[in-house]
View 1 (cartoon, helix red, strand yellow):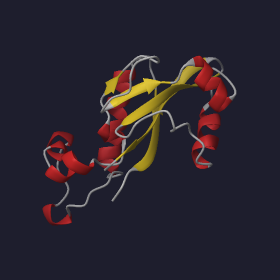
View 2 (tube, rainbow, N blue to C red):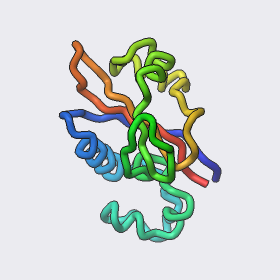
View 3 (spheres, rainbow, N blue to C red):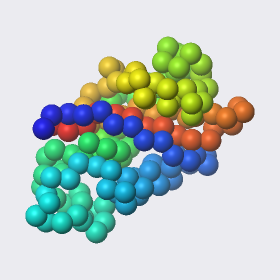
View 4 (cartoon, rainbow, N blue to C red):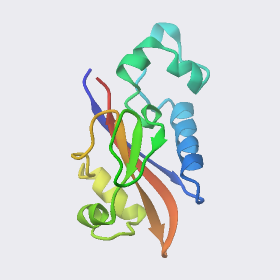
Length: 144
């Protein structure tokens, strides 16, 4: 099938792990991920999803394919989520504190910065409203 880009954003209350878990739960519940095993029926849980061989090989082409936050200067690896540096935020969004609207505009235009990340990893950024981080956006590329 090849690799594909994806993005998701969700409420941020100060805990990136909790925000990631909530995004994964939402994507799973909505079925907003690649599923090629129609004869099996959809799994009942994310853990069950990860047990499917085709998911292990080709991924879900969604946030379900990443699991570990690293530092902004960390080395991207399989399943990692790296926040943009301040310089990368300014280069992409024109500000160190992008808004939800800023993110949506770049996402809709297909201009989120994907070039510095290998497949099966993601970037993230906090999204602001009135100088307060209100959402976390995660975007990446996964698939074979």
